[in-house]
Image 1 (cartoon, rainbow, N blue to C red):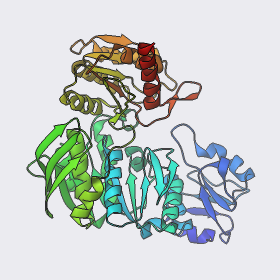
Image 2: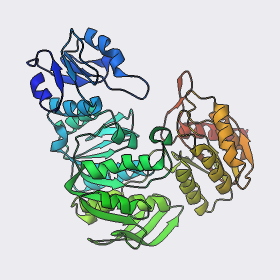
Image 3: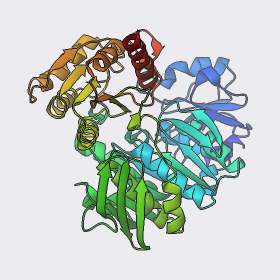
Image 4: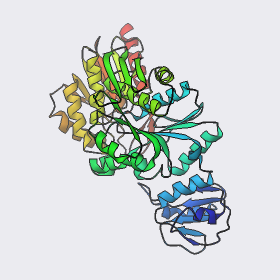
Length: 490
């Protein structure tokens, strides 16, 4: 594609250089610049791409796209918004792959991953070829790749969408984070369905306040959802009405509320799963899922509502949804022969932790022993709130590190303990080393107890100040409990 053709897609852009250059690729990373590429200098959270223009030129960039004024010596396109330009140019060079897919976006604080897995299963049951982009993995048809971030940068996302189209996919289900919406990683993508799970306190270090956080989520429904699409909104969330008012698309509400279009009745929750009757505009359906807890009933309803909104046969959608026995790091049970429960979950906000612990308490264990920490370089306001929740809903808590990143683990723990001290006073242990903390919780466990390990879920590494080390909560818990069992037999 010639540079002048790309320029036509960027109203107001100023070009210095030869407009007849043939462009084969678009990239925001000067380190991995492909041949024949335009380099787009975007400002990241840590560094500014404009610092790497010279490096990009040395790597062979044919042209530079930047918000800065043109420099001599290289073709230069000055734009008002480099992030929007990256999304537009990436899509153009790759042949607008999003236009060949029915896109389904899921956003919200909690439940995004589980809901995307459920929608994916419903689509597959209906015979669709599906791509999946989310926190745990990227999948093109049956090919799986490890996820780098929940929603990739726009140039990487467009590359994934291109692979999906080339692989025969008709649909793509995406976790759409608030960061990705505000940073325009999905800019220019037109979604057939958008699902809102909930909004609770998180990422305020980035968004500043809850209204700004909600405004970012609203972009998916206000700007990116097609008019002929469907907005699937959790009727139980206090933001439901505002979100419904913001979209031009048809609205389907789901949840426990009487106002929900897809509603759960006759709900039965147990240690073996969740049973309920789903009342929908397409009829009533019995749902008997192995997923645990009230919040997973909401996830199941949201996926079913999305499937109905997409026009899938509801009986097939239910059949597909019920094939999902679990999602890695989401209420994941670890069993190695012990006489107590071990549950690993990604809960890393106070609301998610509350939902998790209330669900576990509802399973009637003898005691709940909770291991948790909070991430460094992230929203600090949730730390005492998580401490208070854990203290109130646990019988024993073990406060430890999550991913401390550049912060001292002890400083993060002190902020958590401000909330713990204000809680109901569950016996507490403070052990900064996460492996030692898990070991302590397992040593304390007695028959019939439940050990909950929260915060990292599916993650297989721990991010420290100066390095990233392998760390998988499920694997560590299994190793440690096997060691305990061996010691008991010796």
